[in-house]
Length: 311
Image (cartoon, rainbow, N blue to C red):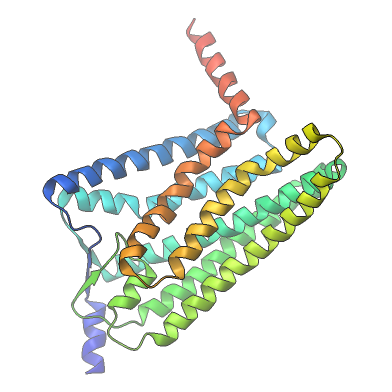
């Protein structure tokens, strides 16, 4: 029986089932997802382009932001194109290898975002608490040492979780109650004992979330203490506002991530997953462009150059 289940698993077909709607509802979802995907791609590509073209944005903070924008594009491209395809064609089926590949990329890019946000918090800590030594401390070598482990450690963690998911057993047709192959949806659909894996996911979520959140909390505790020592209220506000964009993204990301992986309701999972996958990548360029003076100046400079070349 076990062998039969294993063979079925290897040839399982996954039915991606998240939204049960009419034809009109499917078209509305398709239009909404296309709009969200366009906003995410155009916004993050704009940030990357500005940072690459404007020499004034070649500081560690913007190098991390460029990493984050690149990551956001890769992150949503793991899930949204398949959802667009499903809404357009009505074909909900996905093979077992494709499902695991999507799961791996989703976990890799999702975990990397947590560590990159941590690296950005450390950068803000050095900028606020050690402004005179900032350029010396945050050298290009240090930036690489902060950014590279974020990608590398997340890739290892994603490999472990995906390999554990590979050992799950399914029937020939598996109904995945989400809009992509999320690990919680796969475990729920599995027919073998999944209690150990549930416990591992809980421990992994706590670990992956706890280390970055602890470092971010410690960084901002030091930042707040430093800001409070500034005598000028204008100086305090100016210093703290330089961190406001990052704080906004951190709260949105970790708030939705913790809510998602600490709940057990499939209905809530779909809603929280949509928020988790789309909200931060969509708001990230908006938050940084609307609340960042350097980004707005770079946009004005690019527009001025384009209009001058056309005249």
